[in-house]
Amino acid sequence: MPDYVPNVRLRAWRNQEKLNRAQMAEKINTTPIGLAQRLTCDEERIRRWEAGEVKWPRAEYRLALTQLTGKEPEGLGFSQGRRNESRLIEAHIIPADALRAEADLYGTMELAQQLQASDVGTGTLEALAEAVDLLCRAYPVVPAGTLRDRTQKRLAQINHLLAGRLTLDQHRELLVITGWLTALLGCVHYDLGEREEAETARRAAFEMGRQVGHGELMGWAHEMSAWFALVEGRYEDVVTAARMGQAVAGTSSAMVQLTLQEARGLARIGDGREADRALTRGAEVLGSLPMPDHPDHHFVFDHAKWVFYAATCYTWLADDDRAEEHARETIQMHTRPDGTSNAPMRVADAHIDLGIVHARRGDLDAAVEQGLAAFDIDRRSLTDLVNRAGDLDRVLRQRYRREVLAAEFHERYVTARRALMSRRPDLLD
Image (cartoon, rainbow, N blue to C red; front, side):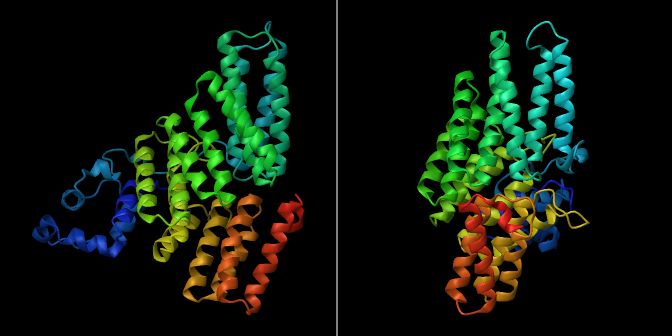
């Protein structure tokens, strides 16, 4: 699993210009400085730049890039003298341990609270905020049902605190903490196919954000609305909700996520030009944000996620070469040497993207192999999995209706859909 931070600004520029890596390398070689210096840029050099393995190219290549793009190197995502930021930040607590760490922290917090004279003190609020962060970091790998139950339990305990003696500042801070926890609950409800409960939680999170003027929290509530609409096939609503969220989110992870959701909605309706523009805007905002301390946090947008979202956008736009490039890199970035993943739901979607690409190219065996790999991943968003598996199933049934392998995948898809409709995720085990 590579530990470099992808250069999404450079990749976004290349994608918007409709260039593959070989074409971009050739254009660099034929710039004025490229010809004068007889540069020999190739696909591998472009790949290393985009993967973040090279943070600051040699002077002649920096000049060639500026001549080609009209942008300074910094505007293309390069940075000088920041080697310590060239690798993905390692979390002190890995997501798989976050749930246990949250339980330990919460037990300590309750004990400390009993010793305080007031109902809620500064230490309690800080511990609560840290506990919620740990739950948000558990989201990528902890089973949705387990996380839902823990989140509901914590919300009940925090709501008890809201009824106690609070200053105005304490009340505001506790509302923000509760808002993030409620937003997380909405996400896991939706993962489990609990649509009404998810929407109730989403609305509650938005209202808490509105009450305290917290733009990023409101932005994530709009993002959830865009996500729900995307899965449910309401693609115009995706774009509308994403743009509404951008109006309040400020320069934040929510803003990046909202622009990428807008790109996905645009890709679904076939507007490749505007989808590329949204992807580029997202890359620009992401490049302006500080590197996150915990990129595994559900409400933090990391650079690898941009590559993942782009993969699905290009799959829906039937840009197969670009879709395959981004999907393969998503799997590579999130797969550890032992074969496990730090972002299994992203990897599952990337397998579906590759399955669709293979199916379009006539390779049924590879298509079904990739599709079945998505079902074999333990941590799943059942709602999203059924939606994306349906994309692949439609392609397989259109092109290979009488093939045994296509029928085998269809059976797995129908089982998953039945598990979602009956709220029985155990049917897939």
